Image (cartoon, rainbow, N blue to C red):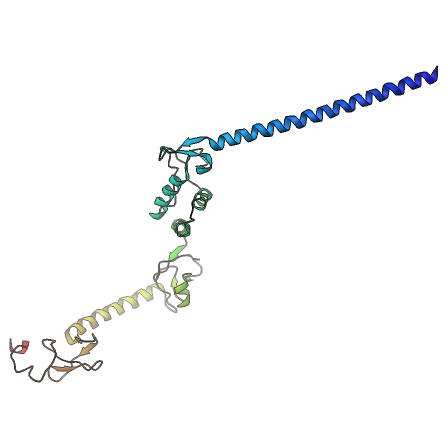
Length: 268
């Protein structure tokens, strides 16, 4: 009797295990079929979205989603219109570009501008460089320690405690151009700012006096344009630079009969 019970228990046990296994396989099959169905539906939705066209609020063209750009504010426009919008602003020196949607206050981010430029073909490297240059200039305007090279205009962030600034422009670096943080003039080694300004004033007055003297006592050679001073002698001049002979009074070419024909100012 005990053997029969044991045998029946084993039979029922085996049948139960097999039924559980069949149930598990059926569930796995159903899950697999469900996944395949979801993939199919997802693919169909994606294809539907890709085929769907959206109207650009700038040019009013119907554009597929892959040819649209969606800003962080949620407004979307065709890529060409987005590119033209930022191109116009950057070309005119504007780096704080707003979303083209009317009344939208979203400032287009640095990353968004880069994405639009790089998605537009061919990539406009000049526009990228212009945007970077204007962005740096905009930043420097807000920097209180920024000073501009008096030679080339390049902005450099200086240190009030170290007034000597070396310009970072390549051409100026070759010439070792330096300028002063405090007075923003060319660096004046050994002179204070006030001393340098006094030197400039005196030098400027000397230049003015020299210019006044030069206007009265020198003229340009009619042929080579070299400056010539007349300190003595007659009005027949010979340029030491090119050998051209001319009249000091009328600046015409000198000939042996120049002072005999009556056409020179000497006779007027």
